Image (cartoon, rainbow, N blue to C red; front, side, top):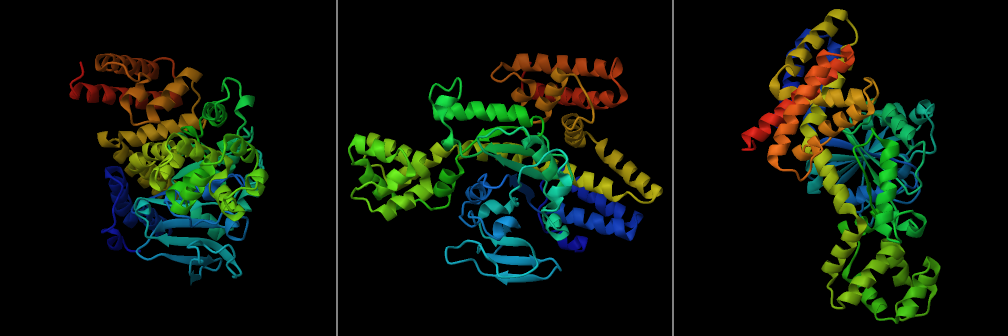
Length: 502
């Protein structure tokens, strides 16, 4: 695609624009093969942020994808499509393009329920491109990936076998990762995430570009979680904190969620008829309801005025926890309308926190994430002629020397520290991760809720400390990171003073 064809498409921000200009300026100075690679980088810079959703088989990835998109389109049952990469992106007309391994494409309709068919009836399928008119996809492309099995640190090669070369290209542009885990805290989830990123984007996942969702927390037995005091969401938060410790520093956060409830509430699956069925169930006596909610079998087989088929559909949409939450809400307000009941279910899903964190970590920082990923690609593309490598290196250094490009330096430093490429003491590592992993100034300083004057003094103090560390006692690699952190604190100090804090 010629550069002129990209001009009308929106860049994420000034950093992406700077990297795009760098690619255009370098194209005449590099080999045709490298120039073609730069053209692909330009295409990705002009595209929405690409987020890959990864996780184990049956972790609820596709259900969460449906909630993110706001439409039940991703198949959630085991079938051909769940073993394929599917890219959900914005289009002016809803359509499915099945991409074959030889590069040919075939357009297929959605099934009668508006979903991607579970069976495609085609041989040699590489991946699926789904185009939807949903507004949420204007600034984010969601990539649903095949569920991964049990992996260990030596399993990168086996993970790569899950995806043929064309399929790998479908996820190679992913600039961020949402990793889905379930309540069983697995010691090898860390290496599973590493194996996934190595097999796809070939860039390390880290707190800049990865968060995790602890899914299906309604299956947690809160009485088995120490400190939960029998409360489900307190138990879920405790388990999420444990998983965050296990996955740190590969993810910025781990958030508990019930994707089934989120999907039903966000995609229109929960209907007025469902609300009326729940209202009828709420009218049953307390003992009957308690017995019915003990298991799925009891809920669907118990004799009552609500048809068994209706109860089966409620169970599929809400599971026992969601049904129980809806009945509690109707106990408090029997006339609660369907829309308000849907909001109760949405709130009970925990999805608002996941979406908010996605916005804070991904959408709000899309310019920096995309620009950093593009620079990594530009660097790797210039791997042939030494003169070419030097020209690309010099151009990148000129770009990074600009004050407005400091965010890229900070993202680079964060990646070096989180991946272990630069070793720091644990407290300093934690500080670097904190400064680089959130756009909120008070959170960057580790002083949420403190007065502005205290933030100003602390930012200046830490700026001075990191400058001294860079000059005395740090290794060359550590000094490189320290100079960046010093600059970050200094810019925070300037920002706070400009805002009237003294």
